[in-house]
Amino acid sequence: MPLYEYLASSIKTGELVKGELEADSLRNLRVNLRNNGLVLLEYSESGKQVEKSKSVIGVQLKRVGYSDLTIFTKQFVTLLSAGFQLVPALSKASQLVKNQTLKASLVQIREKVEEGKSFSAALSAYPNIFPDFYINMVAAGERSGNLEAVLHNLASFLERQVELTRKVVSSLFYPAIMLLLSVVVIIVLFTVVVPQIAEIFVKEGAKLPFITRLILGVSWSIKEFWWLILGVILLIFLRINQLRKTDEGKGKIDKFIYSLPVVGEILFKIDIARFALTLGSLLRGGVGIVNALELSKKVLQSSVLRQNVVSALDEVKRGRSLSVSLSSSKFPDLFLSMIAVGEQSGNLEKMLLNISDYYEKDATHSLQTLVNLIEPILIVIIGLIVLIVVFAVITPIVDMINILKK
Image 1 (tube, rainbow, N blue to C red):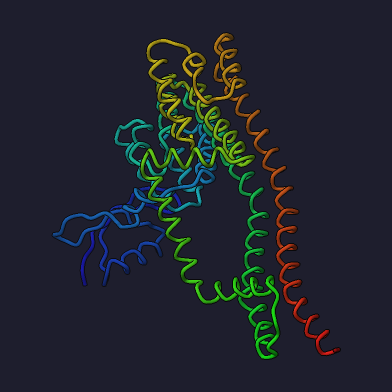
Image 2: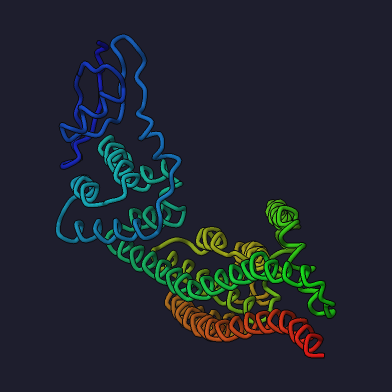
């Protein structure tokens, strides 16, 4: 039976434990350690090279959602506020978080801090878990000696990002279900109901009007060539995905989406709200304007607005104000005017957060209005389709009855 040397972390305390253990396999080693309240980090058979556990390597690859990151940040800053030092706070936070990927990363981050690395440097080893803006704000907090306040700002920022995403998803959930049910009803109608009625007409040799022949033709096409229809849809999605990988293609797609009535306007407002929130939070956290703009542009989904920020960055580096640098951009006049007021009053970060509030509420209201319109529109569309099908079916039946009467 192989003898393993291992490095593990206590599930309860987060403390590191080294030791040796005999096990039939690596799987049994993990099971035995877990039964003893330990998570395997590194292992080696006697005389062989030390290897990292695959679950730990996975920490580098897996992503952690903003919800889990928000909970961790709030718990962590609460521990610091209660008087915990950095390393004990990290140990305690790693016990409190539920997400296993985040838990494992915090154990390793604490190790790095114990080795003498700064907290921001330790975080930077996990870019898939901690975004650039998070690391930069922590670094700014460390430089200013105000890490606790910066973490408070980070928690508020992440919470608002999560809330904005939740509002968008919850608003679109019901219309998405309605749309899906509509598609299912139409497919069942054309592939099951209509073909059964068509068999009756064929047996009776009925003369069919144009509308009935059209409906039967559509039904037959869907039933016989469903694979071709799905193939075309798949090719379209693949082509769109391919286009999005190039700057030119992404620009064309963005231009089309943002030019859509109502939908484009809502996406535009959400983009501005997120950009203003990110930039304002970074500035309030002590990050410089140039670095803050570099980080904030990454949250913009519109390639046009992102390019506007890139161009403005060069102007800001030359010493021009942000409002002037963005004056020829696609950002709305209200946004630019509020930025100018914030610069003149010397309170740009607060003004940016106010801008974010305004555009977030405006986008939420517009989204809710759109959702309220989608439901009756879908009902009307389904009703019209059903009405046309019913009319197409009843017309030849009535004609058959009239012929029989004669």
